[in-house]
Image (cartoon, rainbow, N blue to C red; front, side, top):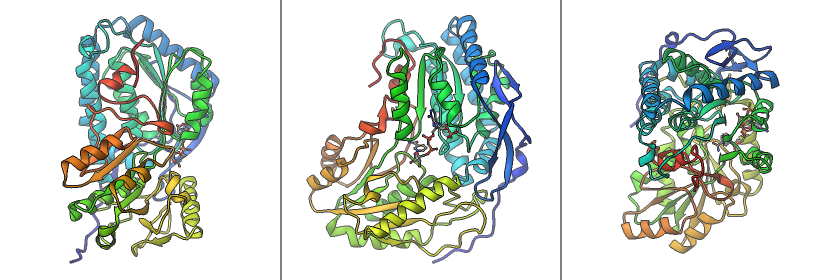
Length: 479
Ligand code: NDP
């Protein structure tokens, strides 16, 4: 049965976008000198002009963060810090609709996801860490935990506000102050968050936000006034950062790429599994570091799973991200679209078989239809490299041992999924898999209480849970 849907657009006017933004330093918005545009990737409409921070701006932000750390934040009791975090969390909830609309406009993700996943989870991170602020001594991280100082935080474009929350909430709960740089293509929700800090009357300089490109990120990484770098993004930039901080005393956490195996055993509940496969790779257009981008099917059920998966994919609604019925929105940037197109073409040239459902893609903006490649082998580039788009590579296996060997045959180790009705098989497989997060009979589930992070080229350290707090405290091991 096919349902016809009338358009159900979200109300855009709930949020006011200024024509131009400056940086947020020392509790105030300060004008920038150079600017660059941020666009809506679904329409290519210019949304606003964003300031490009240079050395003087980063210096000013680090100075403001140091002053706030020394004079105010590190002296304040955990109970008082917790009150501010609760206040921020509540304001984020109150302004959730504004945040969701802004995130969707700037990022291209469906409003259903920003409204139901990104924004509620971002608020949840502040609530969760507010609870820790006055209980750090009981977190099992030493009897007298001390903050590191000023944290430099650099975040990507795939979950802009959520990545901000993952970084800012634990840093503040542990007593650090921060200088954060959002990604060049998605700065708007971080700037709205700066307004929330003002509204919560957070002491000036505790949170500083400088906008810019990779050069601004590099200025933060190399700044001598910074005690800790927290980065989420590509493995390539993660390696540059690791090299830059190696000769310094800076602490560092890196959340990098992934190429997760989503393993389907022959006793899996097939219909549920198909939903999990779709959620694993097409959630957020596949712009997810832990996406289930390598589907490993046990041979005797492969045909049935693929048949049902294709049927399900026929019903995925691709289009206007502001429409509440949309499942897959726009690709975040022209550059990312070019990368997806290039890697998919490599899949064709290496002999894998491409399939996409028929879908009418809008003529403006950046779009890529949900795609699967079958007949993929481990040697194929589409089985090894992060595509970071709505593209699934399908491989098969005969025995559980072969599934594990194929799953672990990657330089990454961020996440994995196991689909099976047998508890013993699930436990056995989860112990063999070299991945930081393993989901069983589900995929892409996130919770502030649960640590997240990877092995090997997927990064160093954990975010979330008690482990994530450890990364913002002195002398505590991160792993
Ligand atoms: P980057 O790693 O380049 O960007 C992540 C953040 O780091 C952005 O804020 C970026 O700024 C900043 N940055 C860039 N260069 C430097 C530098 N030398 N020093 C410090 N900070 C820097 O990712 P891209 O956006 O270029 O995406 C490229 C690929 O990375 C994607 O195709 C995907 O495969 C992967 N990726 C993985 C993510 C993950 O969650 N693991 C998230 C995003 C991307 P700016 O945005 O201004 O360039």
